[in-house]
View (cartoon, rainbow, N blue to C red):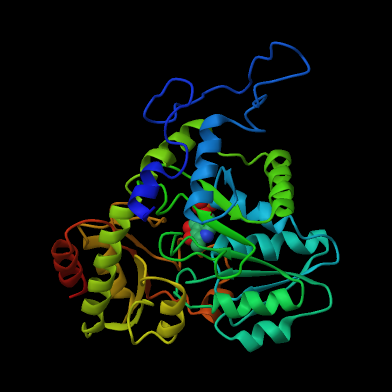
Length: 377
Ligand SMILES: Cc1ncc(COP(=O)(O)O)c(C=O)c1O
């Protein structure tokens, strides 16, 4: 089955009880049992719910995985994964990482006796050198947020396997439609479904996929015990949003590639970060593991005045924190996605006060370019 067919027919989309053409919102916290020793397979929505389960089957299908799990946010999914670490374990992760993940690692893991090392994510040798006898997990994000740095997923995962280390990969930027971490050797693929998978900037959700039964069982227990399960209404919206994901991504990716090429030629733009450009430092590695450059790019302007001018005057993209909507979203990592990191850390990783991130939506690209051209000057 090819992807656009899969998005419409590759997981439960029809209600088995009524034949309804979309899985209904089973808006119930609990389920009646005709006798106390048996239930229908559903007892309490924090444990399982048919609407949420359909979203879990959906991510399993998209990631070519055996198992899927749905959470109340990308961060709830990430934290369920980090909860696999125990006192005495060591974690290795890229230094360019989503701000929320950075915050969990640096503010909470210490308290649980878990140590960690940040490495240059694009340098496989750095991953190797960071391994300690107690290293339990490699945590990857490729491309990274917001600088679109690239990790060779296959190389890093195969290194991890040799040392019996688990690998978890945040796939939010590429989505399973363009990159499949499990096929590249990762044990767990993570998606903030708040972004492209739902695609309409109206849901906060997180999804995990894995092929390991034992990991699934443990992560399912984390979902249940930590309580960050996806709500029924949000699962239903996600299932509606995902049906058009193929067409949405096609247009968004095409727009991103065109805009990245346009920005390269603007004098006021001092750097463009987009792995779909042949000028990107790790374009070849990225194109080996993904089918395209994705729909997010970042760029640097010359000074703060230009930043103010762009954000105050742009008419087409919305100015907001998130990414992955049908509408283009212009954001300012310095004070938005990465604001929870200390200033020094932000500067170390290249998140500067003149950096802009653009998540490309499905608008006509001519309108986006005209707007950017006018506002950048
Ligand atoms: C790469 C990445 N991972 C994870 C998250 C967290 O997702 P959520 O906001 O759904 O918790 C984000 C949010 O921006 C993100 O960009």
